[in-house]
Image (cartoon, rainbow, N blue to C red; front, side):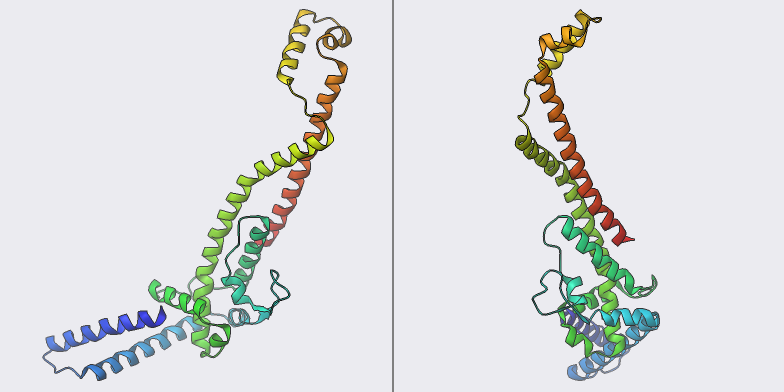
Amino acid sequence: MFEFYLLKLSVRLVAFSHEHLRELRIEPFSADKMERIVRSALNTYQNRMCLTIQARLSETTKQQLNGLLDSVVSSQNPAENPWSRLALLKDDPDGANLKTALEAGEKLQMLRAVGLPAHVFETIDPKWIEVYRQRAIAEHPSDLKRHPDAIRETLLAAFCQTREADITDQLIDILIQVIHKITTRVTRTIEQRSLKEIQRIYGKQDMLFKMAKASLTDPQGSVADVIFKVVSEEKLRQVVQEGQVIAGGRNAAVGYYTERFSLLKKRLR
């Protein structure tokens, strides 16, 4: 994309230069020479722009940016060769679950630790930011290391600024999907636990109706004389047991997800 963008821009600038020289009644240079002049001007412009961006970065931020090219052991595949931090940041989440949410949180922490100032790309055309972002994504860390400091740090800064927004959007989507799945998973867990530990009690609505009717018919009577005549004591014990199992399963599931979301919250601070 970078070379294509420069080529397209060069063609437009060459055409504009020819038109401008004609308006001034000046004989234009040859096509080859005009192209060389335009490319030289573009290179000079880019170098100055990169130096301007670099001047807006603190020494700590520069160290953090360059540190993204260092290798770390991948938590996803420790047996493989170490990945650079930049490669980990480029990697998109695989599915929507708490694990990928925590991984996205770690990436956001890594990007925020870079400490890019808000004004780093002030006055810079967004098209250049996107071009440099794509260039940082396409190039291997070893290629990025060979660039002059100003160019390398500009490419990495463009990547980090846009990537933080991308990962934030990804994390929001993941959390929405995870929250949507929680109710289904909790319900399934409770049902499986209930089937293992107790026999499911059916007809509770009918039992409630019988107990209410009997209670209203003889409000002063004892439980044994009124309630147990329409619903046996054993059946009520089974209902209580079922409720206890369901409540226990719900509490266990809620505790599990609360713990994981608490961990995610800490990582996002």
